Image 1 (tube, rainbow, N blue to C red):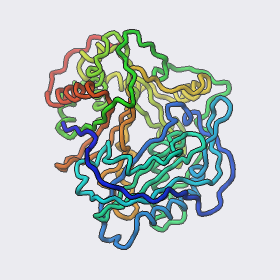
Image 2: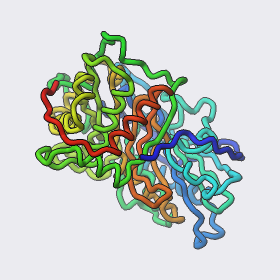
Image 3: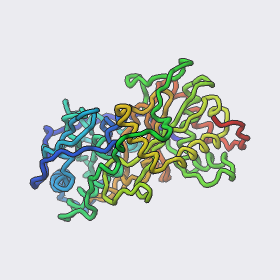
Image 4: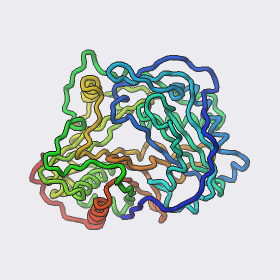
Length: 452
């Protein structure tokens, strides 16, 4: 089990002044409502992405900054809501004012190479703040640019593509759909092969709204035992954990055949949840939960058209008493995850949208909760602006109680999954110990005596 903390690697970045990229052609001046899945409080933040591209001799004389800047303006003609600004209406309803103001863009150069970066190319990405500069006034949700892109050239001829997007506008798959259009424009296409579809009304609350399902992910929690800590953003360390074939095999060996088919994501999420709960030393009688993102795309029951790029996921929570989670074998946690996933339905989605309207668009539960998103198949590693695929592409860091699973190749050439996580320093040390213990020892499966 390999883990990496934020790299001490230092290099200088010379940035040009921020500029605004607007659609190259006129776009409709209109106001578009987001869906009631889009504008929940838990998505009102900006998510950072990074992609690291090596030098390609076949692209000699081509400037990635120029290519991407021009393609971006062309792609925004089709995705013109990204060039607008968010406004808020009655009952905190978010809408896009399609003003055509444009997105934020920075051209930069760094005095380093991909080889020098080495193992630091992973979450948390090296010199994160330099490669995705936080332009003053750009980080808000209302009235701020909805996309910010920084392209940084490297001495080796490679470059780093960094992006920050307002999560209420789209999810990872929706963002990749937009980036694929940028790619197509960069390669000479004039019309996207997949046209974007707005239709946010498809995930709108019913009239009248009614909550018909149990949503543990939005429950109000009381810290009855005093052991459910609130994550202090100023006192967290960030570390990434790599799960290669050996570690995944060790975890799967702990599961009985009677459990049936399990995805690698389910196994890893269950492992992270259990180890995190042990490390946090939660009172055995306290209830803890894990919320795993479930994608709605491609499932006939949700009837989302191809080209839809809004947020199209739910994050149902599995709950357990901390003592049961910690003392039972891994199978216990995996079963809870599979149970929550099986309960997802069209009615669950409608109930969730209705909950947002009835309860004023609340945030997800934070106390005792751990959110995990599977970004393995989002497509970050496939985005090719002409220089080939990135050697790493994915979400740049964990965020508070949120982790992301992403494909990764380590320095040994092993294909696996990297998962970043944020924890207080002493908790992180205990967490790393638990992860090593679980992935290094093939334990016999014990009988599960109780489910919460």
